Image 1: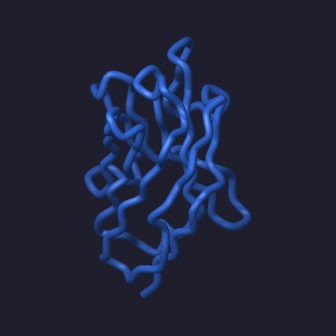
Image 2 (image 1 turned 45 degrees about the vertical axis):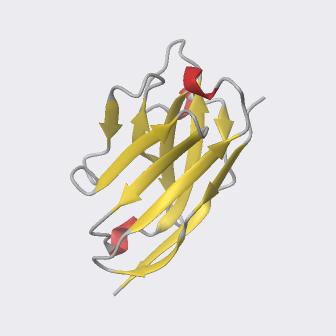
Length: 125
């Protein structure tokens, strides 16, 4: 069982930055792929970014490429999402998720077996 706890959300103006963190309660964090998803009011949960277990490949939604950066620190059991040049469309609840290696599809919600409770990000003009 993996518990995930997000932090770092808040309110920021357009063009600002935030860094989200997700702490995982597992001794085998380095064996999990990690992802960030978001859900705006009245919309489906969408893929934002993902990183594989070996601090190698990263994946991004087109809408955040060049603005968001996902990274992980396996020694701290933590994955981060650095968000720069924030837009009002980035307003959503952001969720951290963990996936085992088998049949992992970074963009595919069912690939992820563990989810955090979410953290609110509000971007206003």
